[in-house]
Length: 71
Length: 244
Image 1 (tube, rainbow over the protein chains, first blue to last red):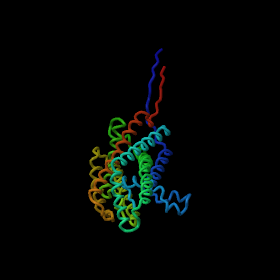
Image 2 (tube, rainbow over the protein chains, first blue to last red):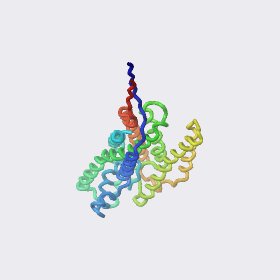
Image 3 (cartoon, rainbow over the protein chains, first blue to last red):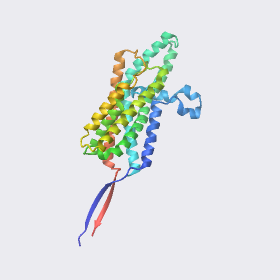
Image 4 (spheres, chains in turn yellow, cyan):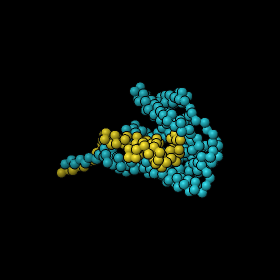
């Protein structure tokens, strides 16, 4: 009796769920670092967030260094 | 595809490369930022908006520590974000990238994305240090910058698809087509409306170091994702066959 074993490697489809999740992360991340002017914290802090600009100040140096418009 | 492995290696590679980008900025871009903000401070003192007092400098140092510390965190966030886009594009384009291992493919793709999404838009709308940039024009500048990046990226994809449709074996048609297209867009898009009043050696030094630091990100994300993809093969399923 003979016995042979083989391994087949196939390439599988790209899951839409994963692509959608990565797309959301991409948009959110670019917005936080490049463009937020208090918008995200305003959900919790209201109008005061536009004065405090916590995320803007936190990402300020990267915003300039990565080429996003600032000031 | 192994979804969890795919997501994990894409996000980890982006976060690590972004952290390296933040560290590179701290080392080579930060001195220019300090110099530019120093000019802003002198302008504030000259205009009477602030007084050059010890209290001012205590508050300034705390404020700058927050911004400098945030640089690395912001790098990790931005890196994860751009890394996510890189992962999406790599997953869809891996089979059409040049033959070779995953590292070769990720470096090729990173080079294309660096050129079309960063460097060409940078030539039109280069990074500026603080002191350059009018708050009144920030929305217009953001719209122009994002529009140029989107037009450049989508243009590159469109010309690639076009070369596939006409069944051209050479990629030269898509490269030349994109080159002509982006040159026209470059000429037609309005310039940055703000005047550059800061010293030119400061602005040019800042821009050069900005390009180096962003390039550190693209090289890093390519090397890390290429290595992790090669090791974990999230797109492969292994079937064993037993024949008796």
